[in-house]
Image (cartoon, rainbow, N blue to C red; front, side, top):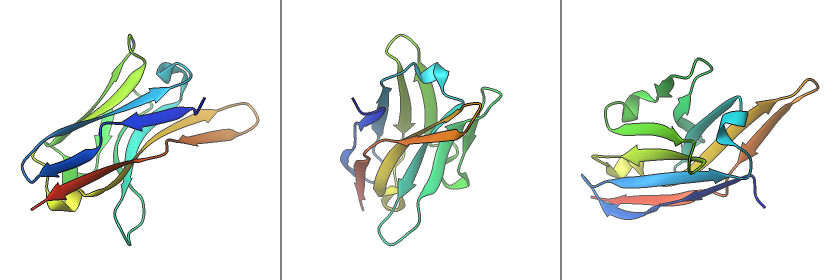
Length: 119
């Protein structure tokens, strides 16, 4: 089973909303950090939102006030609620998790889910 699996992408008009979910094969609270990244065509992958080591959340300036990252222990999922979507939010969204062991750092990525926002 893949460590991380995203769902919830799709096509939406500008101003609309989507909710992405990320399920994990291990407890999401076992990871040292988790977050969402996105990659638009022809651009580098960028951070959208992530949980900080202190348990708070960090957002890209471009999504502050519109996106909310959350975690749910009962369903073992991390979510990204995206409101007031803009065409520039279009891209493939990836769930990411990092686990530090004594010996190394392990980075996990989901397969990505496409988000397309039409003008």
